[in-house]
Length: 112
Length: 112
Image (cartoon, rainbow over all chains, first blue to last red; front, side, top):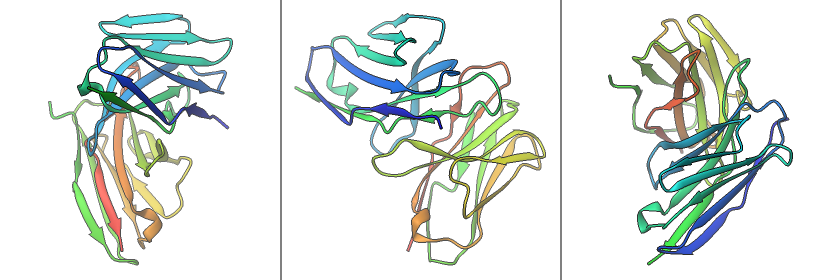
């Protein structure tokens, strides 16, 4: 079945760049997403990328997609303490139920 | 627009009790979803609906039932709650030609 994997934890210093990685197995994935979840809160969509794109940039966020290796990354430039949260990678196809398959999340800790 | 709303926000049940979680969306979306989130895990799909009057099973449907009698509402029922159903439940919706799923704020359920 479909599977999305992420590393569990990342710690960076304030002002550094953070890179969160994700791998997926579904070849029919059409869209890949990054969500942010703060403690006790819901999910906030940060950005998403269409599978025929290699890169997408949105202010401090850069998403890189290597479709051949099924590898997705999220780079956060100039990481701030407010970026501390859990980041989820998710994928979906553009047919059928269009539900999201999530990774288990990467906890980003930003040290002052 | 209220977006996606969920009621209740919190609930404590005893084993064997029943309850219904309500999800409502005011965006005229065709697709609606129920996910559950457990500690250290991403969201997993319980049930989904691709339109009014239709429902289908996701990855973890056991112990739950759903109904979508009106397009804007998606109900999740627990007939006989078990401690293993202690979780945070998220509802989401999306339109047919929209790439984003919109999430509700979540319902935190504890089964004692």
